[in-house]
Length: 218
Image (cartoon, rainbow, N blue to C red; front, side, top):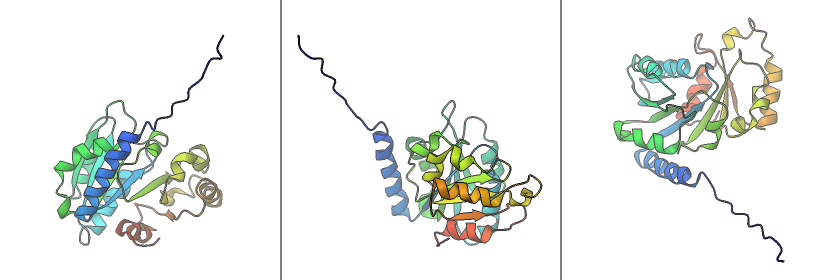
């Protein structure tokens, strides 16, 4: 009798996505566009932050948004009210944006007329961590109302961040938010990552966020 042979075949299941992401990245670079991927759990304040960003920086930067949601165009409609182009990507049952979805929506934008393209990901701290969209930078948001241990519960997502943004700081005292504990959790998940604390409502901390949007050191 022969000894059974076990053959292990490993294939990068995201190979196709990475190839498309590279194409997206090349298109952004050729047009001089800074693409920023925003990821968070639902309700962390991505759309509110984008509304404030579009309103406050419109005189200085040409910006647009591709918005990912399972259903509805509600967020895109909110962002259009700020005078910016916002195109909705309805993902159906898919809980994240992927590079092909982004590539499919790019023809709706004139990238040559943009400085920044925001990619507002589906509210989810799991799946989006694995999908490169071709972005220049990834911002992961956590709100003061979510609990300080989110970075430890979802380390893969936070470990992909170029910046972590703590939102809704105007509610920190009301919800008993422990800033030091949250910062410690972030540092354990992603040592040394820049952290921005802000409130889209009050405007506190937005200068640091705007610097990140422009590609300046944070």
